[in-house]
Amino acid sequence: MDNKNLPNIIPIFPLSGVIFFPKTNLPLNIFEPRYLSLVNDCIKSNKYMGMIQTKNNSSDVYSIGCLGKITEHKTTDNGGLLINLTGIRRFEVESEIFSSKKYREFKVTYKKFSNELQRRDGSTDELFNKTKIFFKKNGLLLNWNEFDKLDQDEKVNTLAMIAPISNEEKQTILECVDIYSKIKLLSEIIEFYLYEKSTDSITLQ
Image (cartoon, rainbow, N blue to C red; front, side, top):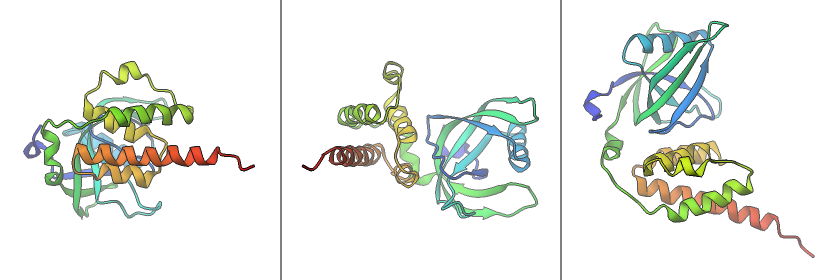
């Protein structure tokens, strides 16, 4: 899907601590009235909504987020909504659109990440080997056989999304323009954590 077919004004779900990447799936339990209004409006229209992280639990948001499409939805017994959001494309915020709606809307552009449409591969062997060690040290389980069925973008984005690293680090990875930068940065971050853990385990005599 090229950028011309994507909406330039989108409703935004600002959420601290949730970093959403293209080609990943994010299950959400929606129960706040304003976000129920957002999701219901999306379902009635093109099913697109944006996810973006807030800064330090304030109303300020980062400039980069990810557009998602609601691919599944069902009503809960208490009147809420369970949805699955599938990542489509990263966007850059241009300005906020003020209206009478309960939720926030932003004017966005996808130009900065237009190269996501091009097929480019980077070397991931070293990253995946480090990640397996890192996950094992942190007691995290991942079905590596199913993981291997994903394409390269899906693999890198999935690891960045679920890795036990800081939200700020995940946001920095999200803002990387190309796959090479994402692989390099994620590899460096994981290597840092592995080194930190190895030095922590050294007992001074």
